Amino acid sequence: MATIGFIGLGIMGRPMLANLLKAGYQAVAYDCNAAAVAAAVTAGAEAATSNAEVARKASILITMLPDGPQVEEAVLGAGGVLEGAAAGTLIIDMSSINPLISQKVAAACAAKGVDFIDAPVSGGEPKAIDGSLAIMVGASDALFAKAEPILRNMGSTVTLTGPVGAGNITKLANQIIVAVNIAAVGEALTLSSACGLDPEVVFNAIKGGLAGSTVLNAKAPMIFNRNFKAGFKIKLHQKDLRNALQTAEAKQCFLPLTSQVQQILLSLMGEGKGELDHSAIATFIEAASHVEIKKPE
Image 1 (cartoon, rainbow, N blue to C red):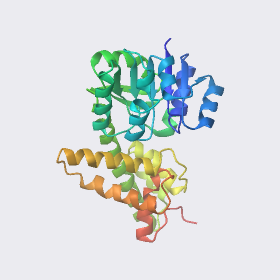
Image 2: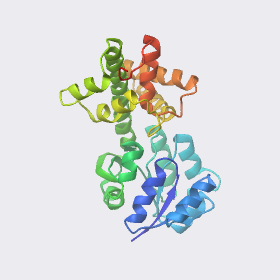
Image 3: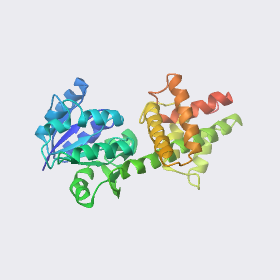
């Protein structure tokens, strides 16, 4: 089995790397956080001291980073992947970034004979841990065929959505639906609580109907149990909606609901809630309504 280079060992990258190791792959790992690298070594990976070193030791690399600027720096910057990569190296960027940046980085890689595809994920930390992420890939048919067996160890669905950049466009569509859905759940449970109902009872009553969704099932219990420990952080979802709006502006596409929820996320970040789970979108609606979503005492 191929040795996989893995760059980015945060809340998502750590369990994704762990699933590759469990599948039997050898791995070389790097992160700017030395403690994260040490944990990866304990799990069975080899440590690298730079992005370039990862590329020198592995012909297939995965990057899982916060945003486009970090991907550009890791791949194109000083000490970056392109400094160590040989022609024919495949970079699988699983970060959620602006699709225009994916295409820019892919073009720079192609000029040096290096392949680059985008493969962002959905499912948050729980699905990263159990290897059931939804993975959306932007690649040629040939590169998809090369990457798919690796990606199958981290996701339950791996879908080729189009050429480079298409994966991140699809991820933006996903993030719009998730964000607006959470906001709707927050409004529904706020109304229920304002009327004196038990939000858990309301949740159980509606989850089997047309309003039921994966988002409702995952986030409603977090809201009424007041558990906002991050599976996916508010600040990262705000980033995704910002990327969606920037892409929409470039295409002259009108996204009013996305814009409104993005402003809610910015407000929550201003309150110091950026590290909370995105289910805390509901707290903005609670505060505006002077209601707390909780079970009656």
